[in-house]
Image (cartoon, rainbow, N blue to C red):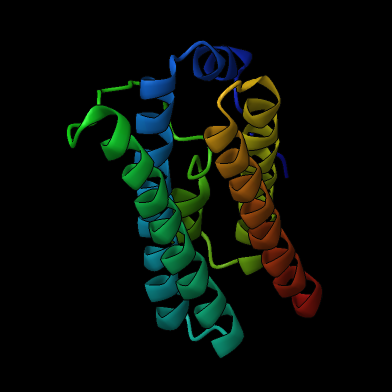
Length: 161
């Protein structure tokens, strides 16, 4: 199962200025945290193994921390108020809605894997194109963290099989 993200969405992300881009990813990380925390609750309701519940919780907590780290940089550069960016969050597209509709953990994990891989790819692309060393370092760090999320979800999927 592949999460489809239009070329139009990716082009819009790549055309954001630095302030808009930071705002977009801050909001995205917070949305991702909320998604994983909701998945945690849903996994508990479904009586899924504790490893699944704790992994979703950990990924939510990590996403919140990533948002906080990005927001710290944003505040130092632009102040407290985030700019409005009307582009869907690529990381939480389809994941939560699918999990509420089905009780098939494998499908949800596959969708979440695709979302994490996409986020990693975009962060790496942003790092390549970024001229600001501090932001480049942060984007690479976030890409590596998204890679860690991907690997944690992949372990859950492998354990399920």
